[in-house]
Image (cartoon, rainbow, N blue to C red; front, side, top):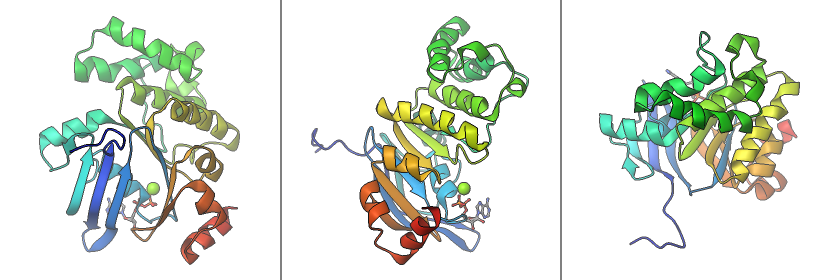
Length: 249
Ligand code: ADP
Ligand code: MG
């Protein structure tokens, strides 16, 4: 029986394990993301952050454990995969925009072709999203005419067109020049303030501190520590997290 005061998690992983061949890359991952919650995943390179976030939208499979996204239990079926893809929006380090399409067409192509949405309806929905990411004046430009920060904001708006229940960000600012990082983080903070559920892999610890409900620190495929930012940054409990916080402070 569900208790309305404690809504069931939007994303729930239980004892999830994944191997690439013999390499055990996710070890007994148990995590829950409540509706509206923001989780920041951090940890050294190779610790499994991308693999974890890619499992959530079905880009990677796993061998053991359970994963549920909204009402969908990820059982490897085509139906579950389609449902999980619909429920999640993904923004990668590299923008993955269609270079031969305008900003507007980058936003409307998915809804038109995958959902059969009429073009005028897709355009009507795209406009406020472009305004939201401060790109109205770039609507009819091509990705090659935009800065890295602008392209990443197009990628965010494009993901939002599919009205995902959970947004997944995998190091969205790591490929950007420093002066463009804040314009992308600002858009993400605005989304967070609006109640968007999100899982963000990032090394931007200022963002984590301001936005995260929970900071999850991974190392070698394991969750080493998971705590609200105040506790995580001021008093990391493990030596591995202390070292990590020390390095980025
Ligand atoms: P992170 O995002 O934390 O840097 P990843 O999730 O990308 O870590 O990688 C975790 C581990 O899995 C690393 O050792 C990486 O080399 C390995 N790995 C990632 N993707 C693959 C793949 N497609 N095939 C084999 N090994 C992989
Ligand atoms: Mg990664």
